[in-house]
Length: 632
Picture 1 (cartoon, rainbow, N blue to C red):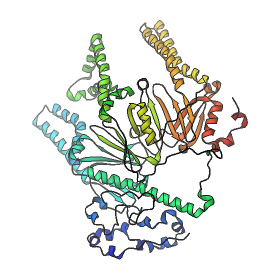
Picture 2: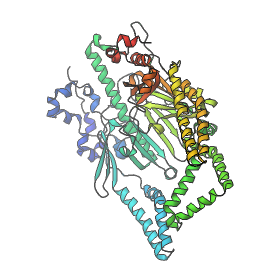
Picture 3: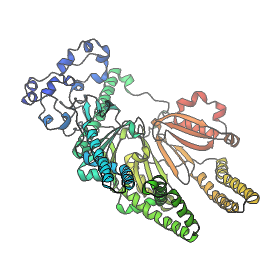
Picture 4: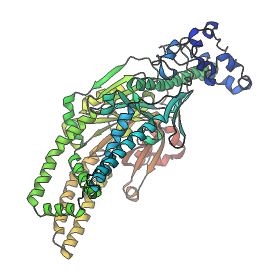
């Protein structure tokens, strides 16, 4: 394989007046011209570089799309960070045009957050400062000195915010994002651009008022946000610009990979051009299942899948979300009184005495509980609407973008080529009313419970239609599990409560009659376990349609996961002592996405092994004997 000719620098680009006005680009080592790269002895002597498919395209050393070049681009003087306002899409159906290469972005100058964070940071610190400042005022008896100390604390918080702003910078240096903080000791966090899985932009209320935003970068390393990059306080325009530049690198990487694959196929010849049939390939002559692949950088027009009507927000409490908010608020108030009561000269014994007084007046206690119960759907609806206001799901340049929120508007981008399926979730109230929710199963996604949401509570038919268009259809025709699984579901739903009732009855006879109330409650729950166990059995199911496998389980939270075959990375066949006696086992499909594994609970021994072998026959064939395969 010969090395392609290197791109030549046009002479007029070196004599561009715009280039002469940007001396920093002449002296930046990251922005050397291609002739200087050709003169490197390491590049001339490295066979790996000459044979690498990623380096066979002249466009590898060109500038990002939307930049005719680092040299001679008049927009660089106006664009912060040395980048144009946003990337341009790769033309559809062919290679990139001239001047639209896929090399790493050039190194830009170090930038700071918006100075408006000097207003948001002290205000954000007020909740943590309120109680200490109030304590200072109470202890000082509201004297002039106490007010002076309180003012000193407020001024100190402002000075601290100013120091944090002045000592924090960020920049895109070649193929990485650098976040530098030098308040006391200098620390530099480096995030390779190729590791970026998504970029989220949110606008809390105060940020929206000031025209700034919070930009979070997901690298898929961990669900902990401390392991990811965050820019809290960039302007809205800068946030959109950074989002476009950071996500462009993923699109460029996919273009380089596509070019490399085409080069390898072309050089392999006609015999090796077609991919070999894998272990999951169907029998000869069978039609392969149709599978839609979405690549980052595809030039499909932006498409809005669905905008949730605001009147549907009233159905939010059907999922059980935020229903316990009133009780959480009361518990938080009591805890706050115990923790900070001394600052306000409130003795803990006073709080305990108030609770004892309320206990001695059962009518008031019952009335308070009734009010809290009545407030559950109202408060739950309000909280649900705040977080899911104007929920919108759209497709944009190879990403699924979900936007939602009333006070804090949040935008989450999911790379479509990393989507491996979805999970449909239904609670009891949702099933009775025909509603459901959906989450995406995505590789390398931290905090998938909130960031992977595809649809909030909505009619089940509409959820399936939207998810079917965005990802794929749901698997139907689930295979029933054996009768022994029904006995296990009933046993697990009834037996624990019978044991609790027996223990409470013994305590009532030997100690105090008050335990009879607990025994009666346990018996009621044991009776309710009968329909619960039967419903759990009816919810069990699994299937495989040739392209996607699906498993379903649960009753109070029934979940059906639909996962692409290519996402399966392993199998776990788990069997407890009780399952062995019943001839059952649990099959866990290991998936490098979502929760990491999806279970087919209490399937027959032969059926479970056959299910795993059906999905990936080449993996289990050496370990499955004929006797095991034919076992009923």
